[in-house]
Length: 543
Image 1: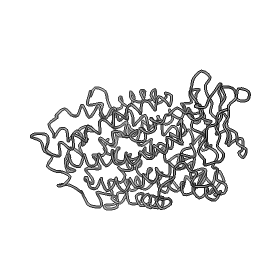
Image 2: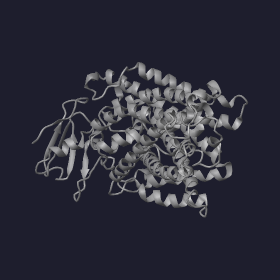
Image 3: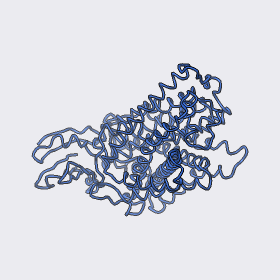
Image 4: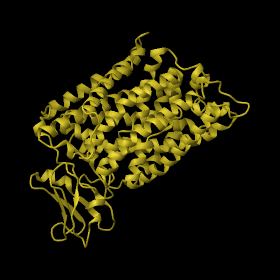
């Protein structure tokens, strides 16, 4: 592949790729448009390539840490105890780690998200259905964060009803999510450091408190005295919570299409996944387990803030007004989580529409490279949070967590399947695996293990509804599984396309050089980046 830009054929502000063995449609994916009055580049889809490496790395580490990790995880603690949570997060963590390695390998080569890759390496219907299910995850997460944030705002004043807070927050996030993607990255970068500092501070407190370092206050070893609740049932109960709270680690694949340097940033972000799993999820599980007993009645209370394990631990340690501090931290994490939910959902909707699976109107972008229609379409679903008025916030939150967790298991398992198909096509087309910028470890055995875990979790997570049998919760736990196959087959029937043959798989569309490599060789409006074969690292060559 050769990328050139000259004022004679492309204009001084356009970078265009040409290849000798690709169609015009495939070549279109290799150009960047640059606004004449700015230093901003746009990929062929129209989105701005504005996310820098540092932003992507921090987003991968803590971008989607929301109030669920402060409030919702208390429900997991109450149902399974610290050991149940630890086992649940470990099992789901293996699935997540394998899935992230698959994403790292594929997105280091192709800058398209895993839903688009599902259409290319499995079938059109598979990719379209995966997009819908991924959007479902973020609709549910966004709704749960709206519910948590609006309820927490009543700590400051009870004169505004919860539905009033939802409307106020809707206006705020409508403005925030409409900014350029580089502003999204900067907001997440700053908030990410706040969240890391906050978690680090709580971990230090938990160690000191559990060790008896706060005079007159001792948690009495809740981890040792109350390790596991309800045995296997307690462990199973933690699965859907783990699925919901892990959601977001795969976001680097969605981000890839707006990354300046996908082949560098994505593998690095994938490697940060291990750190996120241990620092955030294992860290919170242990910190909560050594400071709060799972049978503390406040964990199942009505107040969102007072039921947070952090609030309980700080109150037990002697800080009576800790709820105001925790509310402030919930506010910060909610801003980040809701902002990320809208971003990830809207970009998935954008690509789903762009590929012809939905209304074309949703794939429109403005001159800044922002898909405004997709953003506001996604954001409308925040009003699902109002359902908490009729069912009660606790019941509504549990329903939302169940749906999001199950959808996450299906999506993550699908990514491992896509990766197996990707490798099969790569080998059938006689491409060298050693040319992959990032290789998934223990392939294909890691994939087989993750698929097994994903299928097992999808079926086992609803085990608790059978004794006694509860029709409503049974539907909530299992409706998404048959729905996935129904939608998949319906799409394939409509498009009259079935499983893609390995020899027909497209490994060219979506390959682009790192933008910094391109503009780094720019000289008097002319620059060139060459690659001799698909799969090799981009080589810079100045004119």
